[in-house]
Structure formats: C-alpha cells, structure tokens
Image (cartoon, rainbow, N blue to C red; front, top):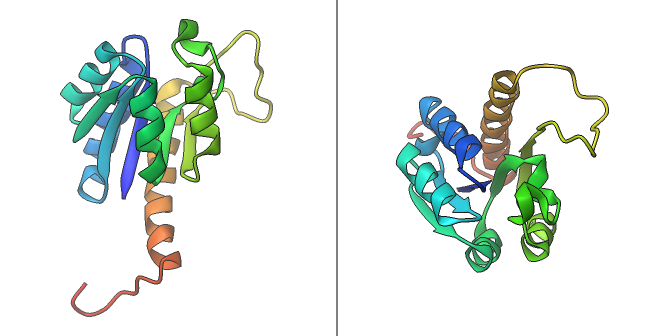
Length: 151
C-alpha cells in the first residue's frame, strides 16, 4: 500500500499529517510518500518521516499512477490554488486518480463546503487518521485477504 501526502508552500500541513500517521503506526502498514509542489514542501515532509519524496508536477502526476490513498487539503483539487502552486495538470491527475482521496477541509473564502461541522484542524486530522485506518482494514478484506492462524 502506498499513501501519497500532497502539500505545497512550506509543507506544514503535510508535515503534521505524516507525523500523525507515524504516531498511529500507519507507516508500518503502508509506504508514506511525500509529494510536494515544491522542494521545500517535500523536504519538510521527508524530515517528518516520509519514506520517499518527489517534487513538482511531473513527479506528482507520475507517482499518482500507483498510489492507493491520496491525503491533502481540499485545495489540491483546485487548479491554481496554494498561490498558483497547484497546476491544472496536478489538479487533473489528483481528480482522475483511482486512489482513495482523504482530504482535510481548510477554510477558503471563495469555497464553502456545506455539511462540515465546525471544528479545529486537529480534530479533522484525527478523523483523517481514522479514515486511513478504516480504508487499510477494508481494503484487505475486499482484496480477498483472509485472517489465518499464521497471520
């Protein structure tokens, strides 16, 4: 299993996400891959503990072809977001990827996501970790993996 954490600018959200995934021992079940829109974001996520990392549009598009889960903020779906760092090609690749997308809502003054409860970012990150764990458990069942005495 491969989890891609996508972030840009300073990589702060990606760093926190990777630290949370490591704290919950998810890195033992899946490979954590830092995909930064720039080298700084990638470097910050690698320092946080990602197994591998790559930067830029081509690296992001290429690596999403074999990713199981994509994690990032909702803004990774919007071309020209993050002050223009999310290119149209990146947004398209993320949207078209067959990977499960677990996105954290961040306040954007021009986009309102209805139905979300008002809560602080750490609570959304708790939910994100829970959803990743659920996906990893359910994915194993749907892939025909059965528990045996040796497991």
